[in-house]
Length: 440
Ligand code: GDP
Ligand code: MG
Image (cartoon, rainbow, N blue to C red; front, top):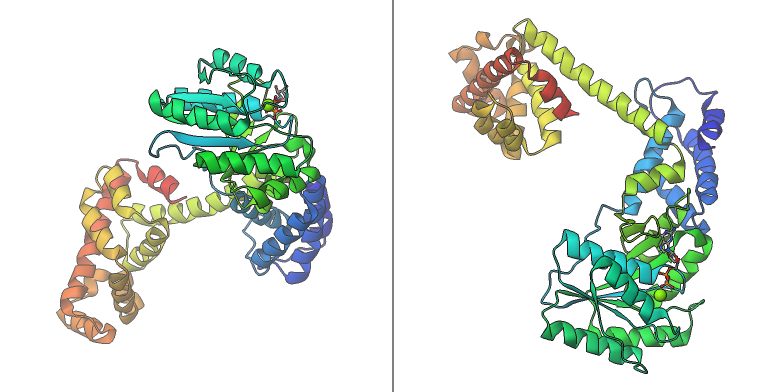
């Protein structure tokens, strides 16, 4: 597996510091093989590796982590980023009825997924849903959806023999309007291959109903072929998302990466079984873990990063235990908080920190930050370590040196005072671990 391959490549490396270009390139050759083994389409794998290479070169290797492990983590993060965020919910909050059209090859799982989605929309989003089968090519297809509808307690459009797909679609939307349904799910017919008749039918249905969502249903087991299918559909209909079915049977998950790359649309759901409840929101991290087969390494690197942050927090705690929280600490804190964002919210969550809220919000203002930094730089190391030394004369010097005013210097010292007090209080309550965890 990739783990062995990478350790082979990196065994010779003992050095610390940044990842070199040669090392990254040899590691990425192995990553590429791993992607292909996970059934990622070749051009997609190539493009992906190029991007990851660019990110990895020059990256610092975390303490207690090997360069190989570091590369795996970078590749993993790139996978998650490429696969996109969790955007699983459907866009159905439009002027009703929202039309959702399901497209895909025959046997990909459209009918099953239509019923699964209907159940989900009904139960989780409290929508009134109507399903309609436009599959007139196969005799039992419309009846199949009706059966699933009864199982899921979701209404299906009454079947009228001999009606054509576009007419059924129109009738479904009209029925939905009259009977106040929120969502209409259209289960279209599929064929064994993408062909002109299939595409023509789909375009006609789309033109007649203006779907808010058009979901491509793809069988993840079809691997490399899935890419051609997706290309075919993406060229002719405006897809808004992808549903990957049979992920329960695919240990590799490579189709997900290919689908995302080829359609440019998010993967919204994953089918993980035949039952109507076997539909999950799509989780990029899980699939990224599967593709790399290296979940353990990824969590190892994450733990290493956390450890370093906890160590930093502990150093600060130790200092504070000695009653020390000087201006250098304040400087570090501000930088750390800056990275976290939303400090006002944090202050609200922690008892005893209320007093800090205003001060921290002020500190977050970028212009104020530049001033803070300038004032700190105008102080001597001794002054930063022992703020009580800063008397009126020194304040004037610091204000002049930093292009600020004595008033601003006073504000900085007051902020330090407030934070120092709040931190001591927090420590007494044993809340520092909590704070450290939040910094992580
Ligand atoms: P359609 O021709 O695209 O409408 O495909 P169907 O919905 O009729 O599904 C074809 C077969 O695949 C059925 O036997 C389904 O039960 C099965 N199926 C659909 N989705 C999944 C899934 O996520 N996992 C598994 N294991 N089977 C699925
Ligand atoms: Mg079907």
